[in-house]
Length: 117
Length: 175
Image (tube, rainbow over all chains, first blue to last red; front, side):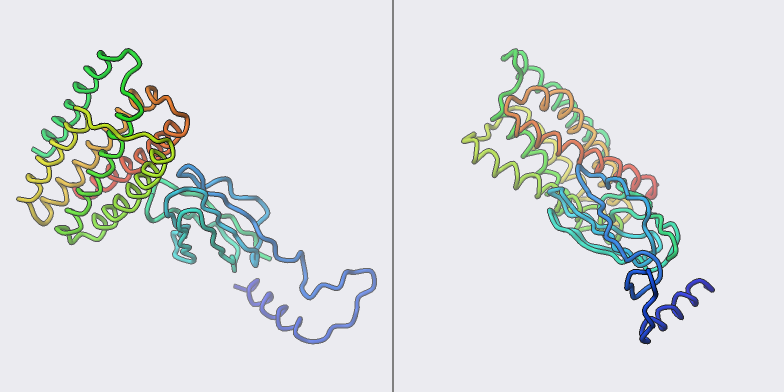
């Protein structure tokens, strides 16, 4: 909670003009820029979830199967419909461990581990 | 009762696959395999449509919807593949036995409703997928000559194993 508050406050600060910092790249936010991580679904399985996911990053779900799937968080924090051969995105907004599964094929599951930013 | 019918279907599949094998040492032809696999998928779609007509259980209906969606997807690919290969699926005693067993099962389920229907439908789905998966793994996939047909059957087997596990999990909640 306190971390989130600090983050929110930090985000507010970025709206204000800030003086250039010597020797540092001109970045609007503290820490590394948000990244995109791919999770590939193939042959009725979620592929490995990349390490190093941080709050604010995007997960790109790529469905290579001929079947419709979903990437659905057990806590319902995301629910992405993935028609055959299509992709979808989730932006992870907070840190934590998020078990997910496919609602159509409950045997398909995985865990998303997100570090706070 | 349900299990008896499913087992009759299983027995028919196994027994009738045997003469086909004995007639031809190489096993069923690709044209016969395509017909068996397509028929097996189509019969499960029809069973699912019966469930969607009769069941009011959200989980059973969601399962049935997955069966319609997934089996239709595989069968669409199968039709496209046989067309591409110039193969005409050939009716055979195994696909006929599956069709006959499914017709009997459909009739039995038609007389049930509510929880009794849900339980019987899902138990039969477990048995049916187990039977088809056994036939795929032991006979159809090893006998397929064409690499693309073999690959599609393997994809089907991966999918149907998930269906079987899903049906087993669902059956556990209905007991």
